[in-house]
Every structure is written in C-alpha cells, then in structure tokens.
Image (tube, rainbow, N blue to C red; front, side, top):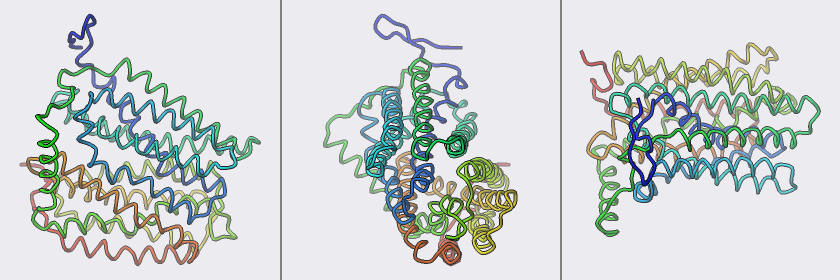
Length: 434
C-alpha cells in the first residue's frame, strides 16, 4: 500500500512496494560497474589492445571506488538521494552511448577510456545514493528482508552485462559485422536499456519524507566532524593488521581478474585458449557468474551457522587453491568446451565462497557508532588493494607468458594466508544466535 506526501500542488508517493523498485535499482547499480571493470577488458582485447595496456588503464577505473568515501558526505549534504540516483543514471546512460559512438573512431582507446572513467565516477556516486536511498525508502523489517534481493539482482545484472552483452557482441561478430561495429551496436543496445531503467525510476522511485539533504551548522563544523569520523577508523585497535588484511587477502585474485578474458580469447599460438567472444560470454559471463553467486550464497549461510572464525581458514583456501585450474588450463590448453566451463565454474565458486569472509571481516571492523562511514572506508581500501596489483598484471603476463604467469599467481597466494593468520576474530561474530 502506497503512502503519499504533499509536495506543492502534487501528492507524491512517500513509499511503494519494494518489489517495484529495489530489484531494478540494484540492476542499475551492477551494470556500470561490470561494464567498466570486466566488459571493458573483453572489448579492448577484441580491438587489439595489448594485455599490458588493458590491465594498466582499466585498473585506473577502480579509482572512483577507492576515493568514494571522500565525497560521500557531499552526496548527503546536497540535494536528495533520489535526485543523485536519477542524475548519475542519466550520466551513465550517456556514457554508454558515447562509448558506442566512439568505438569506430581512430582514437577509440583514448575516447572510450575517458567515457568509461566518467561512467565509473558516476557509478561510484550512484552506489552511495542507492545504498542510502535503500535505507530511507524501506522500513527496517523490509531492509533486512530485501538484503538477499539486492545481492541477487546485482548478480543478475552482471550476468546480463558480462554474459548477455558479450554474447550479443560475439553473435554480431559471427554474423559478418566487423569487430568495432559489432561492439558499437552492443554498447548502444546497453545504453538504450539503461535509459529505459532511468525512465522507469523517474516514475517509480518513491519520495521518502526522510530523503532530504542533510543540515549542518557551518562548513567548518562539518569538516572537523568528517575528519574526526575518518580518523577514528585509523585509530582502531590493530589497525595495521586490519589494513594489511584488506590489502593482501586477495593479492593473487586481483592479478587474475584482468587476465582471465585475454587468456580465454588469445589464440593457442600465444598460449591462450582461442575461444570466440560468445564462448567467453557463456563461460566467464554466465556460468562463471552463476557459480560466483552460488558460492556467495553458500558462504553467507555457512557463516550464519558457524560464525566467521570457524570458516576463515576454509574460506581463504577456497579463494586461493582453485586458482590452480588456470595453471592446468594454461599448461594443457584443452579444447573441450565443457571442461573449460567446469574449471572456470570451480574457480568462481571458490572465490564467491571465500570472498564472504572478506565481506564479513569488513563488517566486523566497521562496527561502532560510525559503521556506515567506516564500512565505506573499508571498501575504499579494498578497491585500492584491487587496483594496484591489477595495474601491473598485464605487463607481468606479457613478460612471463600465460603458463608462467599463473604459476606466479599461485606464489602470490602466500600473502593471503599470512595475513589471515595475523587477524583476530570474535568467535561469535556472524554466528546465528541461539
């Protein structure tokens, strides 16, 4: 049942059925992130960019998420969350269209990177506004009930983007379109689809009474309060260990993420598996994402039953040991499509299961009076830990070749085990209360 509030001469709904807007909002949150972080890698590989340049330049797209905590207060202090959601969705849709129109140009790499960066900045800002709006637009019992819905539809957006869009581009390539035109059409379709989401949200998002810009007494008091809140995170007990864990738990995995798609696409003469664009969309963007989602769901349930401390070592193994499948694939170069699917599914399932420990650890260290801000800081540090190793992964791969690179990745899992041994976890944290 909808509630209404007066706004001038018009009566606007203060609330709506959460099913009408929560799923679509988190689909809109997942699309630009997946586009900037993953699909851009496949796009540039198909357009002939080197692995060194792909990994280095697309890793810079993590930067908006690294520094997101620095401008998140500005979103609170100016306009409403609803306004920011619609504005950033408009910019994201325009960025997608701009990428599509500039792909066929001679300077496509520079132009598309600029629009991907604009998309990434807008996406990070959209995350701030959407997560805040979620808490304002839902009553407390609905917030808890729809946490799983949020995650599920975010993952669905990843399947649609990393799987569906890549498959569409591959189908167009196979239908006789040259590679730039095939990807331009696919990106333009995504821009139209995202614009439809914007139009839908402009009508369907509610107008919660609490969704208003925050008040403050003066700019000085706000600055001091912000610095105080920010500083409290870095004065937490055991902060050095916390930072080391956040930066190095996924040290190996962050180097793989920019190389998987090039490895699957490169011809066997270069040490790759020589798959088509559509096959990569199926393996990495569909089967892989579904496995990732299932691993995450199982990981959340496991911690709910036994607590984080019980599962932490099993989960760190789940993140790192399945990377061995890429050692096998790069050494054996199998051509069995189902076997390759199985290998990627195993690695992604393990990563989804083990990443749950990382998420729960960030929640644990963010507990306290300023948990929202401190969690945002933790996610920024997480993004930094992803950005820096990923930047140099392409160069390392081109120096070593795929087979030696994946052996190096296994050696790079060692820091993840070391930092796990350093942290302290409350035995009861995350466990179901009896």
